Image 1 (cartoon, chains in turn cyan, red):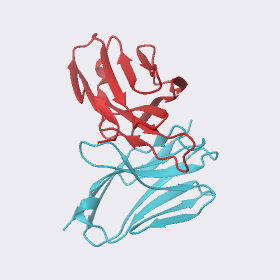
Image 2 (spheres, rainbow over the protein chains, first blue to last red):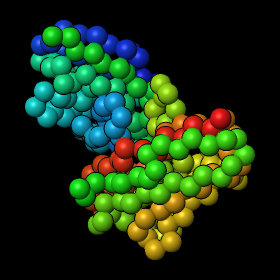
Image 3 (cartoon, chains in turn cyan, green):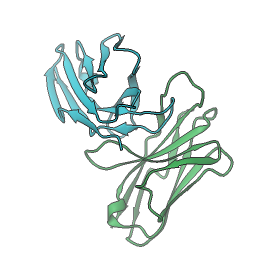
Image 4 (cartoon, chains in turn blue, orange):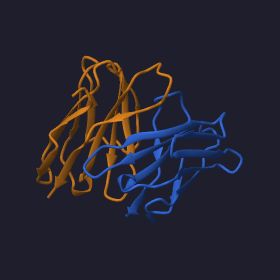
Length: 113
Length: 115
């Protein structure tokens, strides 16, 4: 089955700096790569996603890049703010929209003022 | 609030007892998912429904686990003869089939502790 590896497991940055989280996947048939943010006591919430026919996508301070050849994708957060502190999960799926997601183990991001 | 609702939020039970969790999805969503999350791990897929049909089950879903969605609205996840290894957060999510994105909307989860 699909195996999604995520690094680093913890990341601490100062407010205003950039944060980068990287993921690799094993199944070349995967075609959908979302990123979820999970705050303490809450369920994960989608922050950005990308499909395999696109190399990069940006939404304000958040961007995701995808390298299909190398089977890795990354989340970039610029101008980090304390409210960005949370656990971030990457995921991969090979089905149509809504198909079962395989999640990475998560990255705990701490943004210090 | 029109988000995904899960009950109970917390359940403590003794090993060997049965427990049932309920999920009420966003009303116009016809897909419903169950995931399990343990401490320090990402959510693991258990099963999903489109309307009342259970379309996929993970091998993680042992015979002690059963999920239903009888009228294509709310869903229940029952765990029989609980074991300590069942202790986890059980997350429910919903989505709209045919939507332009694959976004899943998660509930806040039901935390199970098996003593």
